[in-house]
Picture 1 (tube, rainbow, N blue to C red):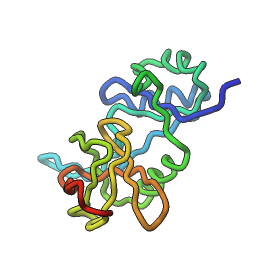
Picture 2 (cartoon, one colour):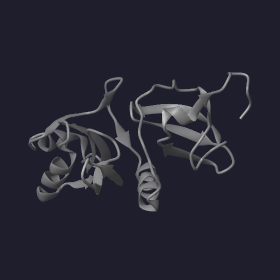
Picture 3 (spheres, rainbow, N blue to C red):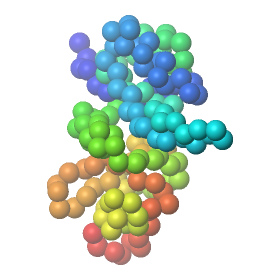
Picture 4 (cartoon, one colour):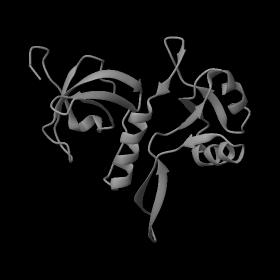
Length: 171
């Protein structure tokens, strides 16, 4: 019996909520981080919930059950890196949940920063924090090691707020 892990499912465009609900109805353990934002239309403003990571839903299951999850309408595939299915640690999902639960404005951005590059946060609530990009989870997020708290944090910091530091800078 293989162990339960959080796998990263890619969905068709704008179907994350439907896929998450269908998976839950079938009995799967699912996490879809949603953020609330104020949208402006010409005649009104409205608060809407949108997925934090476009096109992604987290599904807790066993590797040998992935095919069953993909039978849900709107499910496309499970994300792979270097031939292995991408998985997310429970602690990292807890970090995402804590950030989402605070209601702080969170964006995701697809600009790439290579693993190993040192970065400094130039704006936003984490301004002046310095860390190291240690792993690209996918194009929407990456892990940054934050010195001083002895934790690796899965954080989404808008690319425009990150400055890549020269390699010789100590962090």
